[in-house]
Image (cartoon, rainbow, N blue to C red; front, side):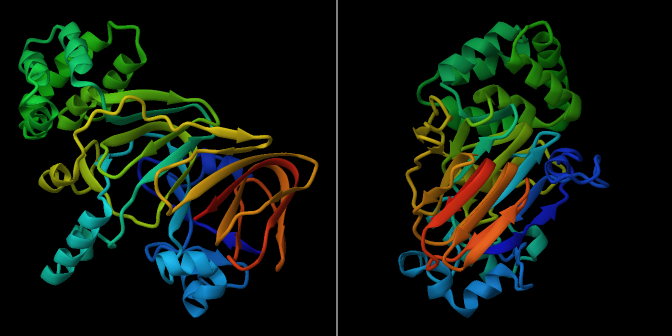
Length: 382
């Protein structure tokens, strides 16, 4: 067991309060702190207490660091990436590729020699992800039933959106036509439609309406604001989660949470951002199936909560410690992250005391974890 030092990512949408407050640093931080990465992705590998970058440490002895099963399944790399995510403003409207799309896209861009700043595929891995709320968390996740979206759009009473509602009601066209139509609108045309829709939404006493008004204020001519009308809007309470399979369009709006994903940084953006947007590539990877409920079902076993997902790249456990030591027999490499109280984690190789916002890495061959103290602990594993 070794202490693990994460890497803060200062994206513009980040909060200047959440991560700093959790870790007991001065608030507000000097810059927006959007994410802290705990993992071995080459874009921002964490550092072990002994000074080694985690990716280098794994590469030096992958079988010992990952354990036999994880090494045989995923090769010499950590298959997951754990993050603290603090959204002070909306993230970009985005989706992530599946494994086949990521591999072919990465190979294509490597072959062409696209500059890193213009790449969609910075690695060859898929990126399904799950977010667990630490505070109330507002998000747009996956497409709604198009008929429900059409009814709500008609209720706004905006003449310029009547064609969108009709498209959504057309079983042959539906989302596959509505989404590219919206993303293809000229900025000036978008501005007038968004203004009218926001004015109508401001008269509705709904969270979805408030989301539209807020997005319109920040992005008055961005087609992504209109695409938000097609998505599920959800509010998570602490301990609730959303799971986003590859291909699902989403944008996190505000809140603080723990996020885990397959070890990838492949993002296809469609709007609500000043970063590079690639609509054709986004449309190529999108899954246009409606998602009934993006929330992940939780399973509680005493003080341990899990959210089963249909992939094996990652698993996440949330542990509520109340003083009694708890043994968690988790196979493979593990990252432990404290989000409250004072906890200690130990394995066959030693122990690490964790204050809130601090993490530790446990090798896959280091035996069961023993957690003690009082507080909240997340354990990420394959």
